[in-house]
View 1 (cartoon, rainbow, N blue to C red):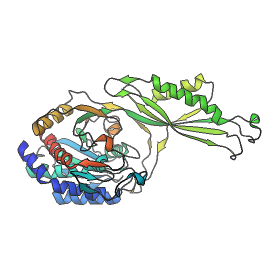
View 2 (cartoon, rainbow, N blue to C red; view 1 turned 90 degrees about the vertical axis):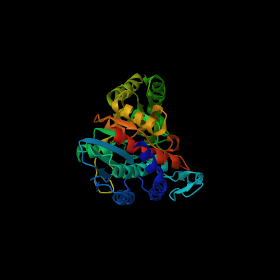
View 3 (tube, rainbow, N blue to C red; view 1 turned 180 degrees about the vertical axis):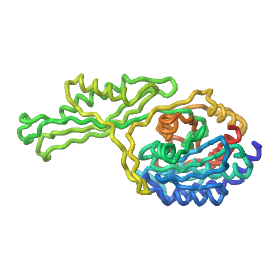
View 4 (tube, rainbow, N blue to C red; view 1 turned 180 degrees about the horizontal axis):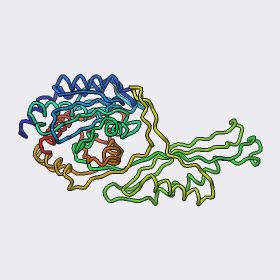
Length: 394
C-alpha cells in the first residue's frame, strides 16, 4: 500500500502543481477569499470528494468517508499582501512553475498545503483508505488576520470536532508539535493638552509613556523560557498620540504590543507583568486586549479576543508517533520533530479546544510573507503522500 500511495502521489504531480498555480493566482487576502474558495470546492468535487460545503464564515470543507475515526487536515487559503512590489522579480499573483518550484504569493504560506491536501484526498478515495474514518480537508479563511477564528467557528458553530488535526503550514516536510501563543495588547496613558509654545502648562502624554516603553524593553529580557518552545517576547509595534493640533501638547498616547507567549504564560500573567511596569513608574495606564471584529466575505462578523493560547503535544503522543511512522514508511527516514516560530490555527484547535494537532507541510517557513515566495514541487508530492499515509496509519 505504501508503494501505491507514492506512485499515485507521483502520478498526480502535474495536477497538484497546476492546481497550486491556479489557486495562488487568485488574490485572496483575509476577508476576500470567495473566489479561491469556489475554485477549491470545484477541484474537490472533480477529484471525487464525497461531500463539499462552505461554512457560515466562508471556510471550504471537503469530506471523504463516514467512519467513526475523524481526521481533519487544515490549510488557510488567505494570504498576506505583497508588500513592496519592487522587491518582487515577477507578478506576485501570476503563479508559475520554474526550476522545480512553484512561485507566487501564498504558495508556501500556505496554499501549497491546500493543493497537496486535495490530491491526498483523491489518493485516499482511490485506495479506499477512509473505510473506518471520516476525513475532512479544510480550506480555512481569515487566518492571517486572526489565527484560529475559523476553527473556533467550525468547532463551536458547525460542530466539527475531529480526533486529530494535521496543520499543513510549511514545515519543510518535518513534523511539528507546537508553537508559542500570542496576544495583542493596547496601552494608553492620558495627559493634559496645552499650546505647544508653553509646554509647561500641560502634561505630555508621550513623555509619560516613554518610561513605560523603556520598562517594556527591559521586561522582554526577563520573560520565561521553555526548553522546547523557546522564550516569550514582547515588542512595542506601534506608537500613536492624540492632541488638539500639531502645535499642541498631546493629551493621549497609545502603544500597541505584540506579545509571544511561551509555555506557562497566559493572558492573565502577561497583563500582570505590564501592570507591574506601569506601577514601577508611578503612572496610570489603561491596558486592553483588543477584539477582532472584521466581516468575513460571507458578511458574518464573529468577534473574538486577540488572545491566542500557546500549545504543544508530547513527543510520544499518538499523533506525533503516527506522523513519524508515516514518514519512515514513505521516505525511509525519521523526520525532525520541531515547532513553528510563527502562530497557526492550532491556537484554537489545540490551545482552546484541546484537540490534538501535529504539523506537516510543503514549503519552508522562511518563505512565509517573503517576496518572491516559492515552494518545491517535490514537497507537494511528498506532502500528498504523507497525508494519505497518515489516514491509513491512524
